[in-house]
Length: 158
Image (tube, rainbow, N blue to C red; front, top):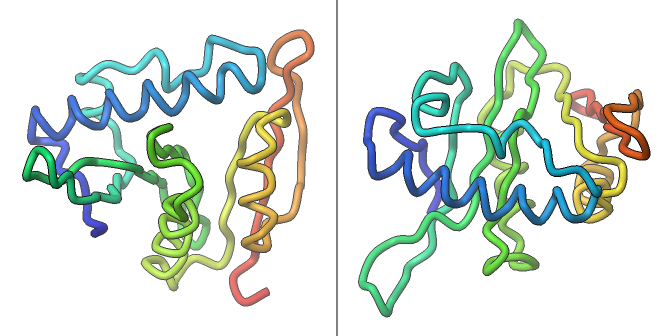
């Protein structure tokens, strides 16, 4: 089930932060860079964010509740939508959650003519995911020795 994450709910923000930390620690290992901005977030920085946060929830039958398994966030600027965070808990890798989140972001924003996203160049699972959805590499910048950030864009309807 997919729904917006209520940033005014303390428990929801703590679950989001736990998910984000677990997911971005994996990315940090893949790209060899531990200073990824999402790893510096706190409950306060998440609550104050202007991004739209959508969570992907799965049923945790043992606990009898829903678990936040993934999330995507974006910012809108006119007809451009920038995906600012994409995260899936490592327990839920390879289950199609990231694909479902991208499909949701695109379908939820029909007014967007251009979608933009960035990731570590060495994060090959993310690179492949964005390419699978028709994103094309448009830029690259070095953020630390041996660490590059690549930017992708997708033009709506192409």
